Image (cartoon, rainbow, N blue to C red):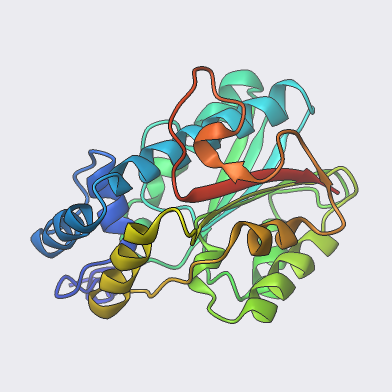
Amino acid sequence: MTDIESRIDTSRPHTARIWNYWTGGKDNYPVDREAGDRIRELHPGIGEYAKADRLFLGRAVRHLTEREGIRQFLDIGTGLPSADNTHEVAQRVAPDARVVYVDNDPLVLAHARALLVGTPEGRTDYLDADLRDVDTILAAASKTLDLSKPVALMLLGVVIFVEDDEESYGIVRRLMDALAPGSPLVLSHTVTHPDMPDVDAAVAFWNEHGTPKLTQRSPEAIARYFDGLELLEPGVVSCSAWRPETPAPDVAMYAGVGRK
C-alpha cells in the first residue's frame, strides 16, 4: 500500500467523494453513496447543488478569461477531477493560462495527474496542502504563478470547512493581500436560510456521520468574504443565479466574484 492509499479512509463518508457521486463520478465508495442517498432523502435537491456549483465555476472562469483578461488561477479545495476543471475552461479560452490546484485530500492527490494535462502553451501544477497553510501555498504557487500580476483565487466550497468565522475570514484576507491589484476572488459557500430548513437537517446529518465537518453561514456572512473588494454583478447570490445562460432554480450554495 502506498502512502497516499494509507491516508484514504473508506470506513466513513467523505465530502469530496459524495460530491463526486452526486455529479455522476465514479471515484466514490459504498459508504459515500449510502450517505449521499440519505442526505438526498433529507433534502432532495441537494444533488443539484454540486452540479450548480460546477456550472458556476465554468461561468466564472470563462468570464474572467474572456472579459477580465485573467491568465492565472489559484484553485484551493480543488476536489476530485471532473468535467471542465478550471484549467480546461481557462485554457479553452486562453491556451497560455496557468493554474495551480491545492487540496489535502489523499484521493484527490491520487488523481492529481488528471489535473496536470493542460495545453503546451499553459501550465498546471498541484500542491498537497491545507487551506490554512497560507504561507506554504503562496510560496509553492509562486513557482508557477507570477504573484506580481493578477491571480484569480478560487475558493469553491472550501471555507465551509473552517468553523471559526474570524479564522476563515482571516485566511481569505491573507491570501488576497498577497495577490496583485486586479486579482479576483471567486467563492462559493453552503448557506443557511429560513426558507430552506431541510438544508439544515441535511448538514446536521452530514456533521454527525461524515468527514470533514462543515459550517453553514448566512448570505450576509458569506458577503463579508468580499469586504474591500469590488463585487461583480449580480453580487453574492445563489450560484445558479450568477450570470446563468438559462434561468435555474436557486440552490443553497451562494457565490460571488469580487475584484481587488
